[in-house]
Image 1 (cartoon, rainbow, N blue to C red):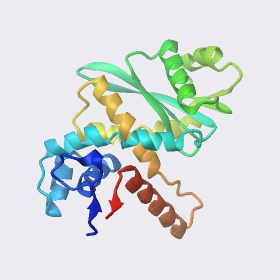
Image 2: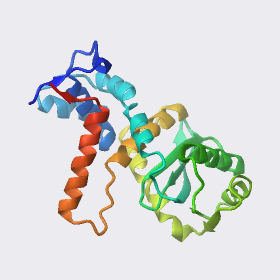
Image 3: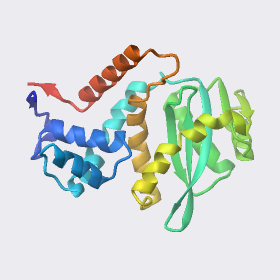
Image 4: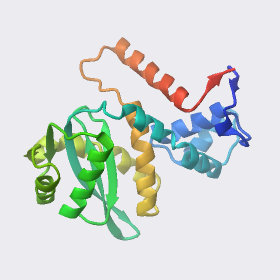
Length: 237
């Protein structure tokens, strides 16, 4: 393995930067539990506890902020909005999500309400993060979207039809799988923090497969991995 220079970001960490970055990549890139990542590292001779992996994920999952900045203004102009219920401590919360026409996640917001006020909060967050309005907004039949849209984005075309919103509904699946593996999220804050780190990393490695030759797909994957190495500050010594 090529020896990598230690960035100040990793100072005071006993393990090399490439090991930490690889553990964080495994945890957010695939639906793995902390103990699964611990076992996968052990199979490669890296003995570390799942608690240490958790601390790494909490600290270095902030790589997602750099990914989000790089993608700002580059995502699609057709927004698909949807919400799904997540039960935490026997209390219902709603995970509001927006994706573009290519399946890239624009933003997520955990809220305790499923009404026009909650929809407006999501739309304001989207406009702030994307710095522009969409060409068209697609939602299901929930009336809260229309009420919020008339106040926040009155000039934007709105298509409200359940059959048109499969892309947003399908985008919830990775979090649903993670919810099962983690045996539910501990709090609304935990869910918000995890999705805020998970989704930008998922965007980086999301390569739409339709009409893309296998060779080109491999090239795009290599570019994504190269970008990850840059963001994780892994520099060859």
